[in-house]
Length: 419
Image (cartoon, rainbow, N blue to C red; front, side, top):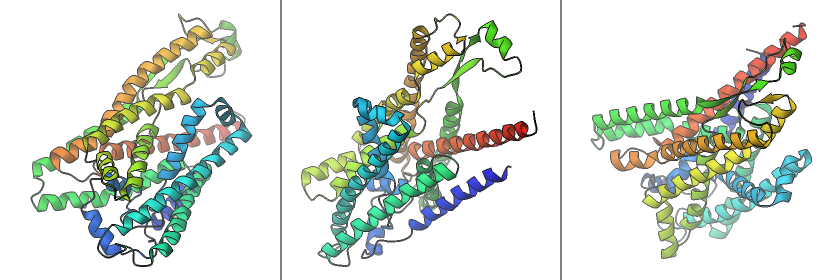
């Protein structure tokens, strides 16, 4: 393997290691024993879901307790605004504008992080005994420290994610979530075997869990690699001019055009209000928080709906049929039986919408699988479709990018020697 690729992989691993180290640095002034006891009874609610995505940082009340979710929430807000306001959409398409767009996302991330940090700080006061609950120092002093520390931790994670994307391999934000979920797998496996030893889960149930997990992984891999190939023909003149070049004779359209984004966005939207409402002592707000928790039916209904919505929304962003049709027309290519230009664009949109329908349903079904496992088999929440979906999709995407880098370096080497 090329040295440059090895260096990128090592850089990625180094930043992920730094992320895992940050997960073990606690916020000053918190009683860790009280938090540990609390999380023993809260693995199935919104905090358990939040804890899974943060790689256990929440139950340790780490400086990265809020994880990368505020940044994802800010990205969702900006994507929705860009789809609504034309000037913002135009800003995204320009090179200098994209930098300003990303800077706005960072500012929105800061605002969301401060709001969530304040909410978490007040939530800690309601955990355990004493006037300040799990907080060991004066509340005003702790509020100042915790907000500053959690803000610094989240922005540090954003920086790590950007560094991985620019200097490493794969999407940095996705890899951070991937690292957090994978870090919880050994503990989840251990917890499951403890439940088997104590008789809370039967051996048969454990076998069923294993079969479901393997089947889910196989399904995800199969569908992620599935694509519809639209045949393309080229004018004779174009073929004669490119006799020594390879011309792609089809357009590949993935069944899941939106990738891992919909379940991540849907989870972030459900976690954000739950985190805010956890600190409230109002019975009505607490009721809403309970309804939004993963142990309630409505959470999974909303999860299903959000995943389908974001699958369609993100697919419309990543797949631009008009641009593809215009490029084909300029290159002298056409889809047999379709008129170049508007006819080709309409056909590609029709195919993409059909694929997105089935792709969104696949994502929604796999994302709501955790609830079935928890309710029917009583297993830890970590053995869920959302976690497996993110892990497998990010792993496939990262491997593809490594392969692309390898092929690119091979072509550069061949070009250098005159082939």
